[in-house]
Image (cartoon, rainbow, N blue to C red; front, top):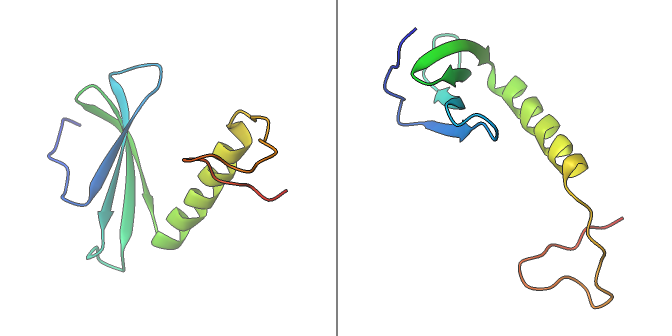
Length: 92
């Protein structure tokens, strides 16, 4: 499949290690049967594959990604004076 212009409701996330690879996220609220979120994996100008999600499943994916990002984030020692500007205090 070749490049198709992205719908207005889309986002692109670039691969950390391969600049030619990206994940495109598009929303299709007017899709038949209800809203639709499409994840497509691109390598250069070629769409390698797509995954079509119901909005509820996309919300589950967001939760899973959030949990994974928190688990993968480097841990920094906390300041005894609380968070500095730009930091968020985490309960725990």
